[in-house]
Image 1: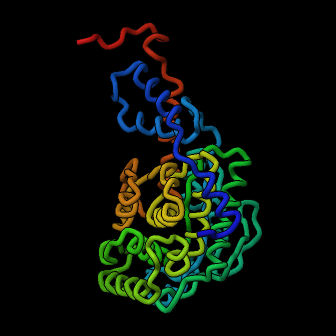
Image 2: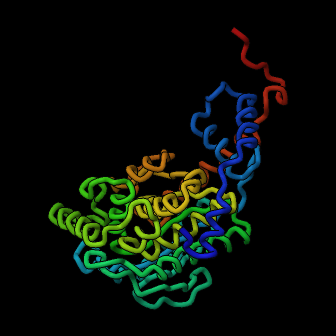
Image 3: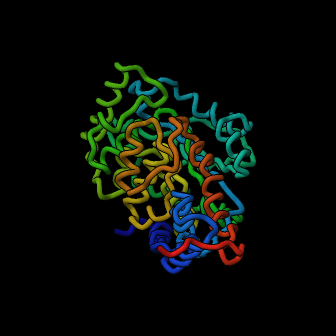
Length: 356
């Protein structure tokens, strides 16, 4: 089903990975100065990168983080331990360079762009902030759809354009993060619907709610799904019914990144929910996804497993903001460098494994 010209064209550009480049990378791995398979998952990752870039020896130079922000009407139901005003306050912290994502982006040497897709207040002008507000937050999903169809399409297109701009500016790889008080609630709803998993299984404590509040949160998510009845096979319908404005923007950006043959680094639970939306819209998109870490949020691994993704590490993180995805950047870069920069046995004059 057609969504919009830009979205349709983006999806059509997402091809399977380049098997010829992957085969060449696999052959090269088998000739490098190490026992076969001794670099473990770094080898597997390097071969995937070769397929993504259509290059047997891929090089990663420029890195970007796309961080989308939006508020959620469902906060009115008491599903978060923090008030809604924390969303714009944290965005201003990002702009000042003082948040966890700023520290890790500096560590990884990555640029950050922040999209105000749906913060429920006005933010100051800043060079790294793009004011692309679709609405002052979503509607309360406990009572009806999060957004209109036009708003959902607008969010996806905003994300597509943001990723296109980063890639046209030289980005070789993009990490995806978010900010939005209450956004684990729509993420649990999205994950429950698409993976067909009970809300009690996919729902965690988010910003740290207590047991009683967790039970209430689960009930609200179940009510949202029962009220809206999203179609689990239609990512756009899921986004409209129980999604988030920033989640839609991330999903669009992920599709555009895959369409431009660049790796999509999936962060934690909210980023994972956006990946589920993108995957439902275009199954081939998951081939470009690299799961950075396994979030403490219980629904995250369910979503990743459904897409056939295995996280690179588990540090019991649950901050969001793209922190896990950005932390994964040096690991992904290391995988590419081992493939392209290690000497082969022939080049190094080292004897290979003797035949049995």
